[in-house]
Length: 85
Image 1 (cartoon, rainbow, N blue to C red):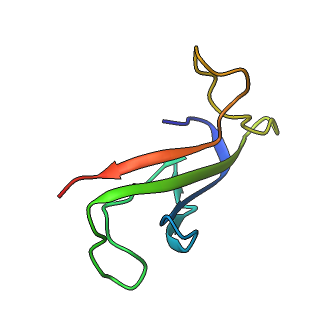
Image 2: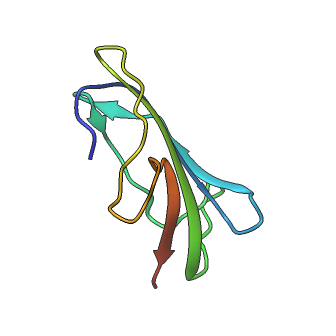
């Protein structure tokens, strides 16, 4: 979870690249909501894999470059999430 965020934009896409959900809501510099498996039209999404992307900037003006994982050569600012029902 991020702290001291100035801006934040989380997007969830299906496997066809269609935007299903997004949030820019921050509370006290932290993301204030998470995806609950419901799309923007209020429909429950099917069980399966979805893609997320995050763009964020900290209060000191530094842009979030992503996470560094041990097996990755570069920072990751997108990935997948599995929805289980």
